[in-house]
Amino acid sequence: MEIFGIALVVLIVISVLASLTAVARDGRGHTPPEYSIRDWSALDLPSRNYTTRNF
Image 1 (cartoon, rainbow, N blue to C red):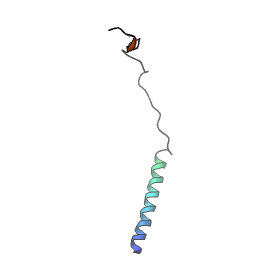
Image 2: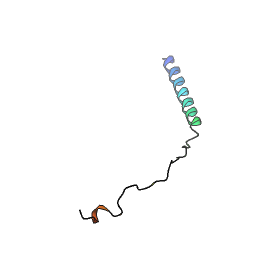
Image 3: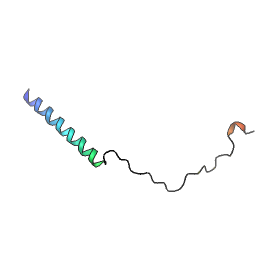
């Protein structure tokens, strides 16, 4: 029974250390900035909404 207790403690310690290492490598939650290649444009969207158009 002591072996299961020791294994559980070791598993908890390893998981806590792995979590702390992952957080440290990630930059403590900072996300990278988003870069855009070109400015956003509406491209071929109509100038009036569809409800006022006569088809």
